[in-house]
Structure formats: C-alpha cells, structure tokens
Length: 172
Length: 415
Image (tube, rainbow over all chains, first blue to last red; front, top):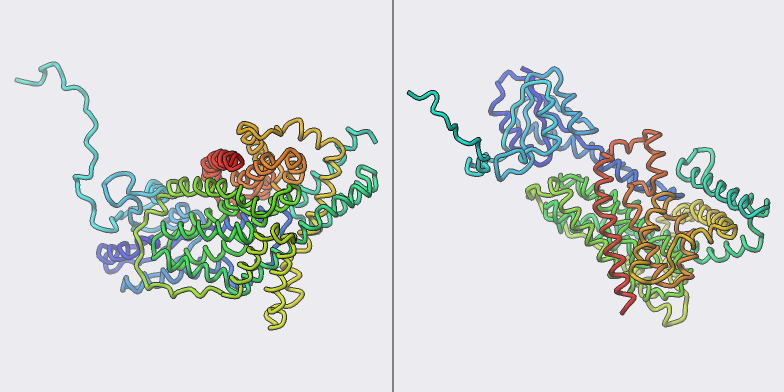
C-alpha cells in the first residue's frame, strides 16, 4: 500500500501519530509538505510596486525561497522522527491544494487532518485548501481530527422537516 | 506649437516614461527614459529651460531629503535594527499568530512612519517572513500586513512617503504640524486595516498557540535608535530653531554612515548604491516631464476635476479621486500632478490628496492597475497570488480607510 501523509505546521503531530496507528506495517509512507508560494509572491510584488526603485539586493544571503524551503525540510525531518517508521520525504511548492492533489496521484490512501474550526462538527472544520483536496482527491482519504473530535452536541439543530403527511395511507 | 499638441506630446512622453518604469526593460533604465523625456521636452520647446530648471530646483531639497532617509534606513539595517524587530516580534508573540500580527502591525506602522514605506517593504518584510517561518505559522497575513501598512501607515510624517515629502515641500506646514494633522487619519487607516485583517485572515490566525522555547530577548541596536531619536527630535524642533528638516536628515545620515565607513563595515560604493542614485534621477526627470504637462494645460484639467474647497465633501472627493488616479498611473506621478494644484488650494486639500495617493495603492498589490495588468500579461511569478482574494482585501480596506482617515483629517483641521 502506498500512503501519502500530508502534514502542515499546525496539525502535523496528530497527523503523523494517526498515520502511524492506522497505516499497515508494510505501507510505503511518503510524508508530504507543501509550501504556499503566495507570501513570497506578495513580498516580491510589493517590492516591484515601488515605481522606479531598484533597492540593492538584501544583505542576507538567504532568499525567501531558501528560508521557506529550509523550514519545510526541518518540519518533514521532525515528522519522520516522530513517525518512527521509514518514510520518504517530499516537499513541494505552489498552490497548496493543487500540489497535494497532484502528489496524491498513484497512491492508495491520502492521510490528512481537519484544519479549520476544531470546536464543533461541521463544514467549517475544513479550511478551503483542505476541502479542495478532499473534493478532488484521486484516491482514498483518511481524514483525522487533530484533537479529539467534538461531541455530537455541537451539531446544529436539524432544519425543520417537511410537514407530517396528512393521509393515513400505509396504516392498517 | 499649439497648446493642445504640446499637451498631447508631453502626456505621450509621460506615458512612455511610466511604461518604461513599469515594464523595466533590461536595456533601458527608467532614469535614462525620464531624463531623455525631460530633455526632449525642453528641446522641442514644450517647456522652457528656465521652467525646467525651476522644477529641478524645487525638487532638489526633496531629493536630498529622500537620499538622506534612504541612507538612514540602510544604516539601521546595517546596525541590526530590523533583525532586532524580528526577535522582538518572535518573543512578544509567544507562538500566537494573532499576537504576531499585532506586533507586525505596530512595528510595520512605526517603521513606515519613521523610515518610510520603502523600508517596510524592502527591509522589514523579509524579516517578518523569516519570523513567521521560524514560528511555523502562516506568513500570509503577516506579509500582507506589511504590504498594506507600508501604504496605510505612510500618512503620518513627511518622511513616511516620498509623496508626503513632495507635498510637504509644496505646503507651508512645519514638520510637527504635518504630523499633528495626520496623526488621527493614520490611526484611523491602520485601525480599519486591523479590523478587516482580523476577520479576513481569521482562518490563518485562529490557530492554536504553539508552545516552544521562548526566543532570546532582542538587543536593540542602541546607536541606530539614538541616531533615529536625534533625527526625529531635530525634525520636530526644526521650525522652532529655524533649520530646515532636510539638514537634520543629512546629519542623521552622516552620523550613521561615517562611523561605518571608519570601521569599514561599509564602503562608499555600497553607500552610494543604498542612496539609489537611479531612483533620484528618475524622480527629477519625472518632475520635469510632469511640470511640462502642467504648464501645457494639465494643471487646468486637474483644477477642473478636483474640488479645491476644504469642506468634508470636498476633502472626501479629493481623497477618492486621488486614490483612483494613483491606481491608474501609480502614486508618484499622481502626486506630482495633483499636489501643486491642491497645495495651492490649502492644507486640507493637500493632505486629503495624500490620503488618497497613499492609501489608494492598496487596491492593487503592485501599486497601480497599469503595473498589475502588465505583470499579468507577462505571467510573472506573482500570478501565484490569488488575485480575487487580494482585490477583495483591497476593496474591504481602501474605501473604509479613505473615509475614516479623511473624516478625521477634517476634524483635525477644525481644531
């Protein structure tokens, strides 16, 4: 079984723990982290917006890209240590939801965590990128709660149903 | 040359110069394009030599002021001020994305106000990015905050934005009076940003606080802070002691640069690059071109469109039109065109123009629609930005910030 475990900064510990618990011992595990390139693009665009200015390149040798790549590889390495099983590490960059879906091609199961509202059951427990991944995943999906799942009492009251049938058909 | 033809010619030269500045062709620096445009307009008689040299002389002190402030900002970077700001944010936020955003707001607003929006975009934003990456929290709201506050918080002082320096020179305000009138509008604009950001990025910000080792206490570079304090005090007292603020800026630039030269932590070439001579020349060339357009009828056209009264309605209209204009052609040329007219109309119209040209560019993340469209045509890397999301953020913040800041400016003018 080829398993892809998508981790992010907020929920990686729980995702890795659940993956270790639920994936069979012979599963080929790949840990995936995707860095959104949007913040780098915003920073670059703001710089380009300064009409006529060509500020000297920053004195620090690291570019924003190097900084985010280093952060991602550190996170993946920590995740593998916590998994305590052999795993391939994969770091991708770009639009997060599309990169995850692309990486899930040819795998048997994708493991990921809810990353929205953790207080109540419902659609808000998925942030938009995660919802996109679940909606478009080309494989089976194991969706976990990063903490314990909220109680059923957090469900909203059911919407008012249709009026009760007037006729007595079916009785007797 | 007839007036209409001369105006059309100067506007064409202006358009080409701005197009070069936006498109940045590698073989034609915008400084060269602006100078060539200015010289061409003098040669064809669209502007007399004396008018052109008047325009240059009028811009001279502003350009000197700008160069000094660029050197001070670069000196602060060299002394480690921005790294210290990063450490301060990391320690103060205690792992909470919301608190990090609060620190980014305060620090970006202060850096913008004191060292100009360029310092926030060029020097502070990378530090904020690194801090968010080390904290393992989404850098998106934090980087967007830098980009927005670089504009919104640049209302406060004459040194916060080149647009302000241009208007400051044209107005008869003292440094302190300018800051006093713009204090409430700045607070209003930043406050609007804060309210919108908290809601807009709620999903990114409402993440659990991440416990971790508390970062070390940051060491503020005392020398850089002392130079800044001295320079700002000089600005504030300039009208009292009767010395132009530009001399305090020059003193600050010398105070922070000369010891570094002596210690050999920098070289004259590096310092010269930090003052961005190409940019200074570009502003001078653009100033001559805009002056040519003004004397050939643009002035009259601006006067016909912009109200010149100081009623609340007039100020709101000036701010709104200035914001639209800044988005069409970028705020630097917009300021050069509008400020001579509004500064002649009085303090209120001049400052309302600044609210428009400073806050307005947040509608498009690259400064103007022209730049935005060009970047999209080129399909450059920033197509990674979700355009819809950015434009929605601009649409939520800019009109509200313009309104709040202008109303408070009107109130401040009444006091």
